[in-house]
Figure 1 (cartoon, rainbow, N blue to C red):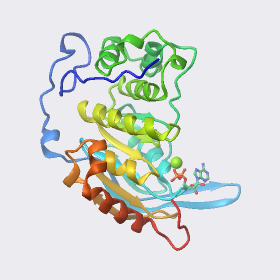
Figure 2: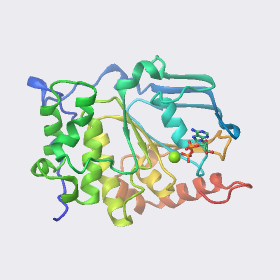
Figure 3: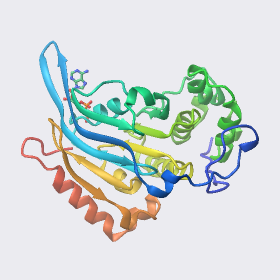
Length: 289
Ligand SMILES: Nc1ncnc2c1ncn2[C@@H]1O[C@H](COP(=O)(O)OP(=O)(O)O)[C@@H](O)[C@H]1O
Ligand SMILES: [Mg+2]
């Protein structure tokens, strides 16, 4: 089966259900202010296990601004997944404070949608059943219309009754993202979501995922060890040091922010950012990402 490219019908977020489906959403005050949706204030995290204690995060301070796609890069094992686990309230910081929209993560669980490296689609369920699964688990009603609208909008409407094995890797990642969006989370957490895809597919999927996130006006935290991928997708990038992890630098990509991921790769600034981030990732103990 050949990959089906989608053409986005409009540039506004679609309404969730009923008569609002398809209606443009007026910009909220928060959209206009561009304030912080998530803030990490001096956050440290120590893991305790049989072998002893591991200080993973050491006093992290940063914000995730509303509507931005924030990249998190750092050496393997520095605590990137730990950051996402704290935001989604899977684990609680040992010290410091995390606020999502002014409240602790445990009170904002429903605001977060998690997308993992493997697409995690169930092979025995159809695409529509997979996409509605999260909503079913959360006992959310009236999600079908919205989920189907997303599948249509992003070129997967004709594949609703197919099974994951009948779709390409790129299409499956799109389905996985739509499943995450189907519960209407405010915040998307993406943990190395393209790691299992080959290079060519990744380039296209990055383009699609970037366009879907921006089009649906979501805030997202995107963890990756791939510098190029982070530069092509994100609005800002946080560079974490090797464990115990600190914020080494925050890179603002607004000069190329209006470009699509593929066009960014052709920008002269792309190399400059790559070099800058690579330099910052060099570490006496750990030379490789
Ligand atoms: N449940 C756990 N118990 C003990 N140590 C852990 C646990 N989870 C992660 N770690 C350790 O914490 C550090 C950060 O892990 P992780 O957040 O998964 O890093 P990354 O995603 O950047 O590769 C690693 O050294 C890892 O071994
Ligand atoms: Mg990880």
